[in-house]
Amino acid sequence: MTQKVGSVARVWRGWTTPANADVYETLLRSEIFPGIAAKGVKGYRGIQLFRRPLGAEVEFMTVMWFDSLADVKAFAGDDYETAYVPQKARAVLARFDAKSAHYDIRERLDY
Image 1: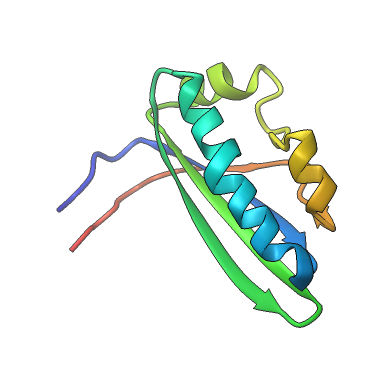
Image 2: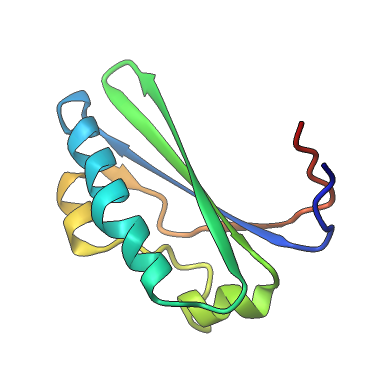
């Protein structure tokens, strides 16, 4: 199925120690993601979570989907590139990207 072209993906990465990886993933699933959805931001379409081990670290990547850059700004504010990292997440992350990257989605095919 082809999705509409012109949407925006907000991509962000953070890293934990292996010992904190499950703690962080649980925090994302149980508190942070539901909290984002509860904001009711117009044009917010969802989020994906990716995880991979990297030796002494575990990398997490999130991809948020929005209808437009204006909708991203409604979520993140005028300084929309600044990463949204709640204090509870900062407590278990070893490091994280201070900025989120934004991409125009040119095409998306789901099979």
